[in-house]
Image (tube, rainbow, N blue to C red; front, side, top):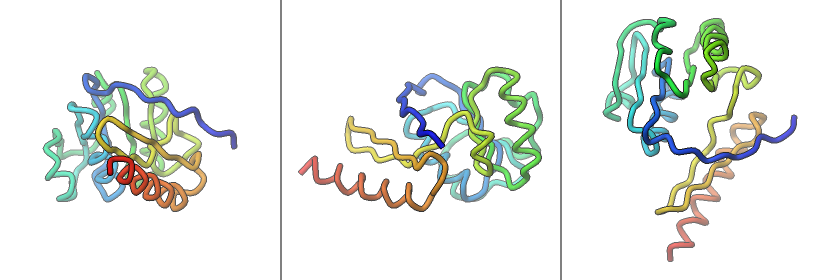
Length: 149
């Protein structure tokens, strides 16, 4: 697999939709909330970690109409068929989508993120090894902490 180009974009005035509200979605919502002020999470059940973030919560099953106005979508349900349907609907609308359960359906990878002041670093293992990306992100976070000393 060829590596993806790291691209940093301003999401401060963009709308992000997250479908699913389990542990993976919670980690991604917490990270995304640093960069994006308009996040909507749609899921029948929402874990407490997401409830605490202050994002917009919609407690029901996903509907295709939820994609209206979305600039970025994260499909993070435990239903692979639903995630694939969301990815297909996003592609039809030209909306970038990340599918947590299938790298082949992703338009972009959700990176490990390290932030220290104005410095932001994103880390990915090109979708091949989440544990490796997580370890590398921790190393980068530690290094950024030393930069400020």
